[in-house]
Length: 196
Image (cartoon, rainbow, N blue to C red; front, side, top):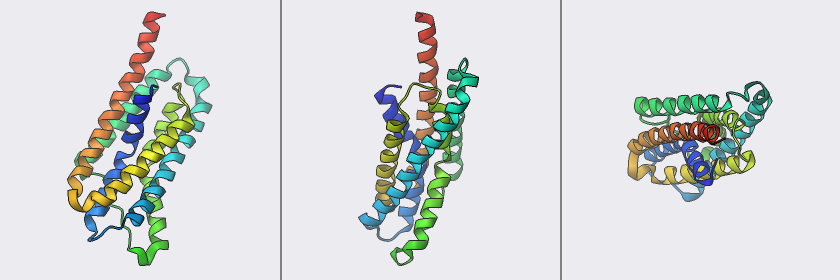
């Protein structure tokens, strides 16, 4: 996977969390930067851990599927992308993060972490897919975590101004990017077979 694909993957994986943060920001009358950054960091850490877990699972299974790994990666990315598009069109983006104000910080951190886990299940599946490709999983996980931190922080800050419509289309765009990456993985393999 080339650097451009990795960057696109990182931002595609953060779109559902971005949609959730935009929804939360739209509900707030005032958003402080430190609160938005705290939410972004929680999401970023969870989103970075999930591909590592998926990669470990996929690496164990790789010896059984090495002959068709490119088709599996293509199918999984296509299904995940399709699901993200469907979710974005059905719900207008991921569910908003239901977080109380700073006075309920301890409770809200757990709620944010739970929401982050719910929006990062697709990152677990992508991690399984990445085990079937030639990629440095640590670099990929860090890129996904950083992109998510940035996107969620910005989404929370901008949510009040831009509303939930952007969240919906961000998730649709993320799904389209995942499908495109799936096609790229398949193309790279088939082109390699033809040139060999």
